Length: 361
Image 1 (cartoon, rainbow, N blue to C red):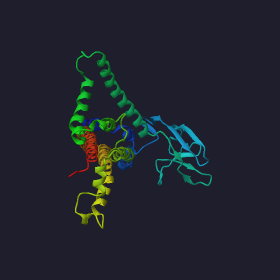
Image 2: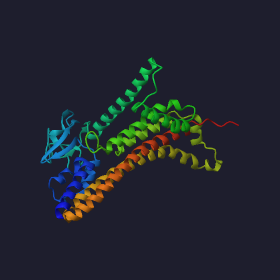
Image 3: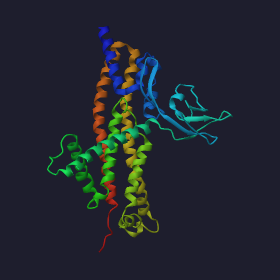
Image 4: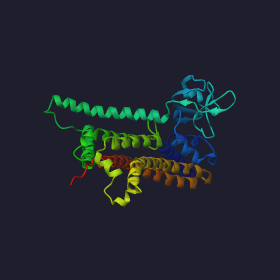
């Protein structure tokens, strides 16, 4: 019986490693369960890094080094591989990755007096590299579909699209007809390219983040800087091309005068709403994707934390954790689509509200 439970525990561990990616690999290499910190494992995965860790085989780490580009305190630029900073005490040209303090996980420079300062850091990190990969993948897919339609222009008698091109056409037309056109109105064609790009960019990165092996596994849409940039783009699209009627409704809304003067209560509320709308977009996407990653990693960590409780109990808990992880992964597939859809829908609604015309008697 013990032999069977031990085998099942090993199978559960292997499945957990596939779900969690390389971050839990050190636990499978013999690290004591009591030395494993679930918090550190989860935060390590959610944070950015200067190298792309793929797997750990024995004592060797398989990782893709990324270029480090920093400007030192002397004004000189330094370009080198992140592999030179691998290790707890590794240092190169006076730079190293801080292991503690307010700059933990970031490259710092040690000055002659011993003070550690943050240099101007333009390094290609894991998240930045993942953004380039996902963008290249998205451009390749879209250009491939566009090439099919260009070929059909020369042969109008060609049949309707099929396979992947037909699937992309179905998704695009669904977003245009059910989201963009009803939300914006007659002027929807002007904003359709941006909104479609927004939708496919978010869903592409959401799906890649669910893949535990390279080139997936990066926490892109769960990064507040990425969601802030997306929300900033929506903020510009809403307010830069807004009509006069939109601004009139903000600074002089159609409400009783005592709500506008002498205390501009309603104009203040409307003005604050300009910023709370994109802020809500940013937080919603960030929190949902970040929470999904944290739940998956937390369930995986349960397997290793309970290893010291015995093979039988660990096998039972491991089985439950793996089943829950599989369920959460399927749920995250749905969340990946829903979050891209909701972000695009709300942006389209906000754009539509900014296209109002002045009311005439």
